[in-house]
Image (cartoon, rainbow, N blue to C red; front, side, top):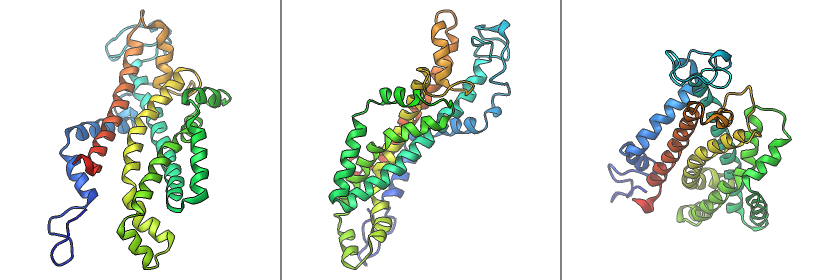
Length: 293
């Protein structure tokens, strides 16, 4: 928090939590590197044709499982499709699932957890019991059961499933943060002055309780991308003709001895993506947690 000046206003040159965090993040090489990697991944997810002018669906069976060749640095897969092009286009599905699932889980979890922490009572008890039920469902087993009955191979059933099982974690973080913030003096003063519940939540509590949610959501985004690839690998997530790293890893796993390049490149792209988001989340956590300063 900013240190007050003798006259009662903020001291010259003082910074609040968010400006302090941004000041630290800009000087953290882990944040800079991970942010640049994520920016690149998001860019190719939106405009893959910038670095790959091929067709990810077009194949030549005469070149099936062939290694690197001029103009095809990653070789070809089982159907003679260019592995490089498919690896680039595979970023779109993974990034879309990760961002949409994280946004949905963060929004739902923050609203439910924040309301439970603010009002308490029976609403808090009900939400806690519901969250316990979802926490007791193994996520992979839940995915196999839930997605096995879905015929669509698009990203939205996967996003919906991840939101369904992902919101309880964020709701607990949001609840605990709101419970802590609502006991602060400035919130008690606002209540004494007659501020409405809506004003206290939106003006005083939410801006000061959102930092832990942002940290958890950023780290969870990488986890959700890995979960999508795992479900697609098992055959219940994304399905062809969708281009996905998980699908390509699954089809290449049976040919790992004959054509390891088919597995290497999509697996490397997936690992780099997940690692980048986890590194970003760690950097944001270090910047926003006052205990680590």
